[in-house]
Amino acid sequence: MAEHALPRVGWGDVVGMAARLMPERGIAKLTLGDLAEALKTDESAVTYWFQDAGQVLVAMAEIRNNWFLDEARSRMAKDDSQTERLRHFIELSAADHDATILIELWRLSERDEPARQARQAQADAFRRTIAGIIRAGQRTGEFGAVSPDKVALILAALISGFSITATLRDPAVTPEVMLATLLDTAEQLLGVEFGPRAD
Amino acid sequence: MNADETSPERTALLDAAEELIREDGADGWALAELADRVGVGLEVVEAEFESEWEAFCQVMRRDEERFEVVSQGTPAETPSERILALLEAIVPDYDWTFWIELWSLALRDERASTLRLELDERFRDLIEEMVRDGVEAGEFSVADTRRAAITISTLIDAMALQATLGDTTVRPNYMLDACVTVSGTLLGVPLKLPSLAETSDG
Image (tube, rainbow over all chains, first blue to last red; front, side, top):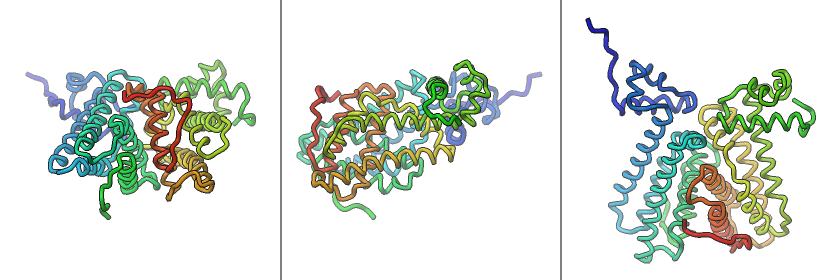
């Protein structure tokens, strides 16, 4: 007679459970055994997909980064100008500022080469998107003659930096302050005006 | 706690705690390991630190004090020179490992969140004082000095974070150039660093 079989879990089940558990426990204290227990399955069902919790975190970070860039492209596709596209990119960054997964990825990246490479690839993709908008805006004459890569690096860094403090509920850096400061800084660096701010 | 904050024993303990934090994370080691590493009894370590968290706090504060000493150690007469000296200090001293640890802890630990805010506010105060001096001296044109200070400190944090993680674009000189560019833009003054020999678009 066959033993009672534990449920098989898919890649997405593991990542989904990690997304629920990681914010409360942190990557340092999350194990594949914890994930298996929460999924009511055997640890081997989890290790079939991932060798350690760090790999799960990298997968979560990639999903989140890809979602953000896809959402940004989707919103920007409706825009007529590069100024509007950049504004919408910045607005989405402020609205979707939760950096919990990113902070954990940075922490893991200090000691884990795959995590370091994943972080670099995600940062590059983020900067490339901003630089692409700036280059296009320069071609249309909307933005001033600045280095697109340099301004993209600056804006991406500021988005990361403000996301940290907003995620940690810094009273001086609310999402509204983050948005206003990012828009003001982009205006000053690119010599452009985004127009009236929403209240 | 040892009354002499600069005693060789205390320094050795903090140095060893730094190593453990780098290797295993802020909350991935125990005081007993620290005692083993320094070659003293656990009671000696416990006389200095009540807990691993207390040791991490002391490491964090010492690191911040070192950074402030370095950033304020360069002779600088004008507010512009003081801002530039601060930014220049980041380049050789940009290791943000302990900050990354603190941010991660602060996601779930109120003590870490409080320490993070305290240290961030201290750094912002330091920058804001320079910005205010510059406004009063007529060098800077800034409407909101606090906001300018927060923006500059945020950029420093984010750039140093990426350099610490070995980002292939954020090389030290590039990080400095970006920080100088943003600071000059925010302060309404062309800031220039004679020491900035080479920058590129990476």
